[in-house]
Length: 130
Image (cartoon, rainbow, N blue to C red; front, side, top):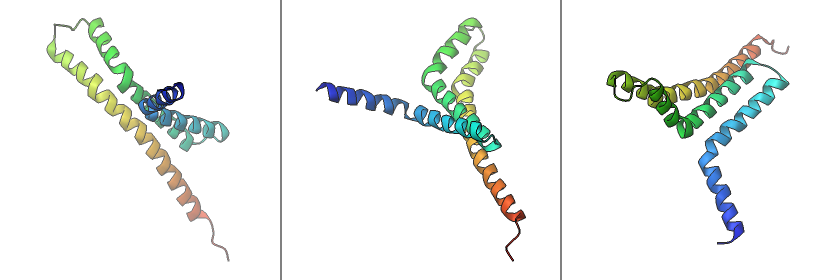
């Protein structure tokens, strides 16, 4: 395998591993550009949504295990209260990822819905030509 093929494989595998993060980052950049060009609720909701989805993706891929272990160690819950430890583990592994997903996609869809409602209401108020 030559150098070109190795570089191509590396680039492809890097993209394949991070494709969602790249898409969410590009979405956040576009939303930031829209927000700076013409501030609106639509652009703000898009930015919040894509940033939340990006944080959620990185949390699932890289942060969850370290944060969970650090929290359990700092609270000294290694062998003590199994019920509270179970609640913390469930929160880190299930509730936070679900929250990132719901808030992220919810913000994106809410942005789209509010933009559609705004267009419909502006069309309803305009007078038809005589």
